[in-house]
Image 1: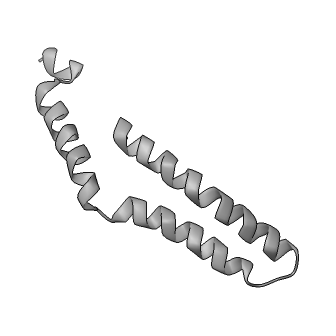
Image 2: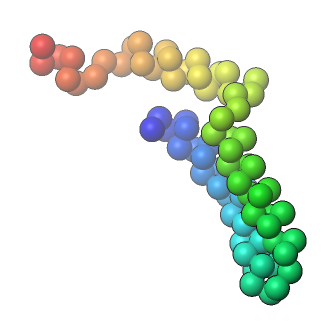
Length: 78
């Protein structure tokens, strides 16, 4: 996993965790609307994972540039 991917996943989890926790607490309290909050938290994580937004393009470009400039240590052994 790339470092920028890990950072964006951490930010998404930071936003999704409170909604998921509230959803679980609501379900444990006997209210079925907790499923809405769990779905919202899952949607946040799915959005971050599967959707590329215009703000992701500079990060993708930086990753591609780093892959071209930096060589893997395994390539030197050949």
